[in-house]
Image 1 (cartoon, rainbow, N blue to C red):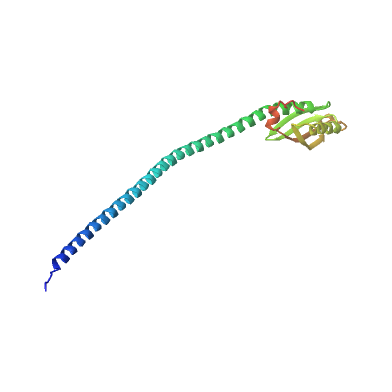
Image 2 (image 1 turned 180 degrees about the vertical axis):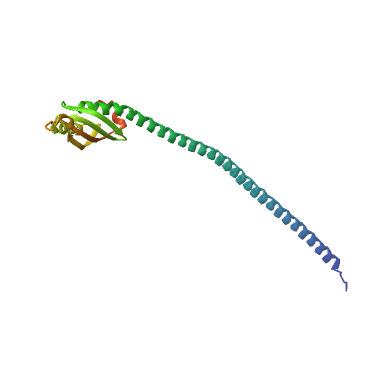
Length: 195
């Protein structure tokens, strides 16, 4: 019988299949490396994009911080200007009010009353004078009540004038009253005509 040695053929087949396996393994490794490189590039690109967005946002935040500081500065200046405007308006009212106050006192004094002293402390006004009778003092107080600039008259003192004799009807009096400053809008409309 003829004997055939199959060992070299099997050996050759094993070598070929081993080569084939190594080639396939190399191809698989190459494909894996390719995909890993692709994933690395994509992830790295996204990381770079996020870093760029963060840089942009930080720059915009810095710009907004500067603008917010400017806005706060403008608000502070605006508040200062409003405060100054209020002070100026108050000074304007006070400047006008003293004229109107004196005008009101003069025009509200009825015949038979002579003022001897006028004292103003804040909004409180004290008037001293001489009257022919108690009725004249009462008329004076009623005319003050009708005024828009002064009100709330209170008679603090009234007594007979001792220098004229015991039957004299002349009375010395003292009245306190309150000054009222009108609102700024009323003055701006020209409503400072003193009624």
